[in-house]
Length: 176
Length: 433
Image: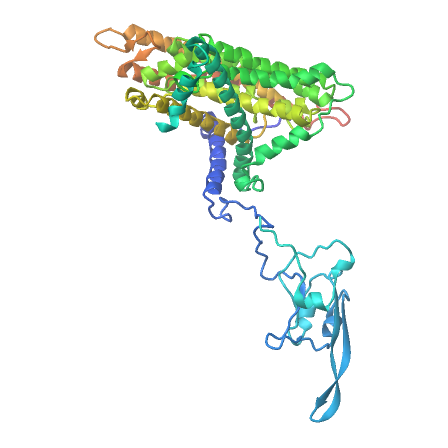
């Protein structure tokens, strides 16, 4: 059996003769070039997609979960954490350690013990950024921010303590 | 005008040391050579930058951005990097040939600029009568460098690249030379400045008379420069890097420079022959008004812009089209370009014959004068343009008719005829008849 190939129609022959497809291809690349020079909308397929990352911060998705943070009361600058340990229980990776301590306070003239936060250990190397801890937190203290630069030079650097969680980690900001 | 006064002041200063003859024939040419080498080297360097930038834009990227504003210092950084890199010569390579091949490539590319008219008067180094012949002869020496480099590297990829380049050059050099003849019939001279002057006095670009010739010259020029879609000698997906696989450091960058310089050469020759060179309508009014140096500088700029447009076309084509298969390359060279160049010569000759025969017949005046190129009157121009467009159609139709049967011998057609079923098992598929 011979393999039948369809004969080209007149339109196809003319297209081939005048090299329409070649011209259309050239037009496409020219369109991109033109759009890139005048920087049109990148999503429409005409502008530049490349982000100049260290210079310009990329926009992450609104539901992106990044570096953890312990929020503080904006007025008193005390931590919002009540050391309830719910986040540590919620964490499927078991990467949170909440260390509480008791302090003596006077409530209505009587000495009482109150459980306050002493140290908060968050192991970002094991974290999968599911934000279950954030949802478990009753005081909106623990939050996964949009910051994504988590790389460090050592394995120990991935373990964040309370100070790092409250102040944020120092990163080099590139300007050029 | 103050800006260009130094040229005259310099001439006066030189007169104190040398005689006028020495200045005219020794000092000025040396200055011109220095300027042209600098200019072309800069142009070549920034052609690499532009190539990267344009390719990036066509792919919705940014290209080099980090070195200098908009990455403008990138060519300099690249050059410095390549200068300090190790110049590695393989153990089994033919040392001396390997050593000299890049120099041949660069020299052959740069020598051509000695006859290219960048502008009128002082903007051309040497206006020789055989300018175009020299361009063709010297630029084909560049092929020798590729073959020598491929051969002496003693590497299979380099050798394959060299072989491919030699075959490609042999087939496309012919088409390139033949394509030029049509334009030469109008210019009636081989001197490049003369060709520009002929176009100027006829006030027409030869691309209008010779659309087929321009297309042929451009296509075979691209093939001659090993540029995509004809970049088989250095096809990175097949041959690693082709003939310069074993080269590194400055020697590699010499090849790179030679490639871009050859591109600039083809762009410059195409501009001179088909796009009117440095000629721009109305610009010579400046010369008449006495601003001679301004006129020359502006003409120079016009030339650079025209050539840069052709260079842009190179980049555009490279980032649009995929590479040809080797048999397709040979097919285009021998079955299409060379015959159409021959048809073009015949048709141009016929057109000129008709125009000359019509001249003075029943009051139709077609030729204005003939001493500085073929200058036509409006009637003659119309006839020529009609013939040029007809030539495009006739060439296409004729060749597609001739090459229609040629496809029967093609791999594609053979594949079509291979029996796919109906065969007892264990036997290989064989073609019918």
